[in-house]
Image (cartoon, rainbow, N blue to C red; front, side):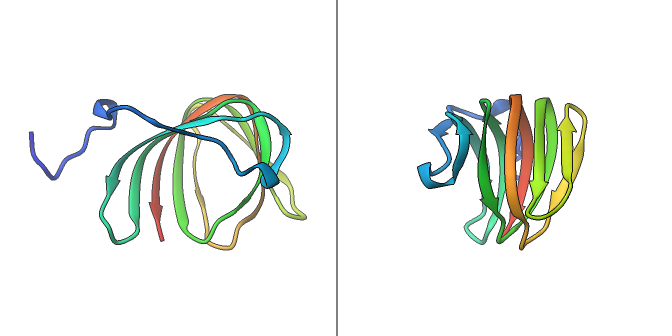
Length: 114
């Protein structure tokens, strides 16, 4: 296999985490991250999964997301709700502020560029 091709499905053990306590709006969400690409220059890619709950988010980076499974609602501060489910793909732009609410455990592919 090429050292320039990374297969997401071959990711190793995940990192376990959770949103910072002061950002949690409701529930007790926990997450797992399989970060398979970190180029040392602000590019990251992998899988992320979260259990139900809601927390405040602020993006200083670009993030492309593709929802693999689950159901979440992303709400921009002062704006409308965006429902995302399996098969949906979207980009969060730097400066986005709002909340991420996981209704059903959600798994996404992501690519982040700072």
